[in-house]
Amino acid sequence: RPLGSERNAHVRFNLGICYLAQEVYDEAADSMDQALADGLPPRQSERAAEVAYQCRRVISGKHPSPEAHRKLAESAERLVNSFPDSKLAEEGRWVIGLALQEAGDVLLARQAFARVPASSEHYWDARRGEAVCAQKLHERELGRGSPESLRRSAEVAVDLWRRFADDVKETQNSPPRKGSKDQSSHPPSARQSAQWQSEARLAAAALLASEAIGDFAEALKLLDVAAFDARSVGLRLRCFRATGQSEVAKQELLSFLKHAAEGGSPDAVLNLAV
Image (cartoon, rainbow, N blue to C red; front, top):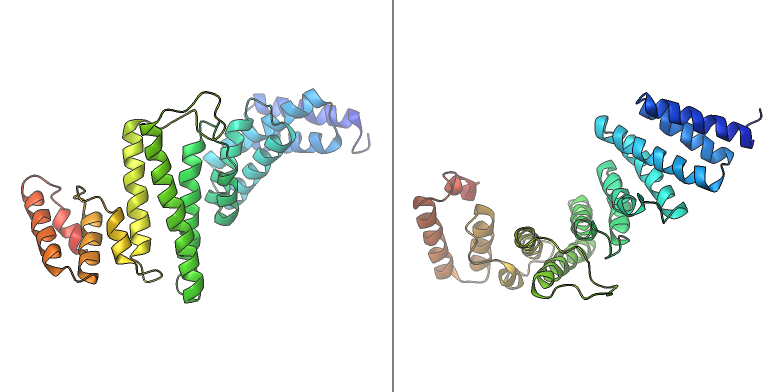
């Protein structure tokens, strides 16, 4: 039969189902891609798109490569755009960003994460992913971008990290309102919230204190004075010295050394030195 015929599409679809049953995932995904291109009825089209997406997830997990991740992103995007009511569409919206990020396409990944709606159970992971990608974009500019472009990319990442920290904190202070379209119905746990807030504020502070921005006073506002991990303390010491607070820096260092001696991490001092 000629390619594009309905009969050929059905044959390809059934072949894909057979490959899926045999766990030959690459052939199953390719068969479903071909069946969709040849033209299937709506119900079979949705099933074919779901199978192709699920197979690409397996392939990218077992045999990760930029090509595998990009194919997964393409399958997820097709599923989301063509069949938004599919039971896999919500997950797919988030996976588009994940797959593109793994492929190294961080700008596209950031844009995909930004499209994940607040109603999704993956919303907060996507918000974090958006900030991570913005920071990676800034890091790619280091050593080749102009001072102005470096400052702009750093400021974008700072803004995303700060808003992420503030919004995550808000979920703990005020539960989501029923029927609200602007608030996530899947708030993070208190433990996860605290971890994410600490991570986000530290990342934003490090960018503020970087050569690209150099706003040490603003960086200090974000740093948790109760945190005694080496990175937080090291960054506070740097900011105190940069703002002329040498005595405060000295007391900070003494407190850190005392904390390490009283049961802190045995590698704390070495990590601070590094």
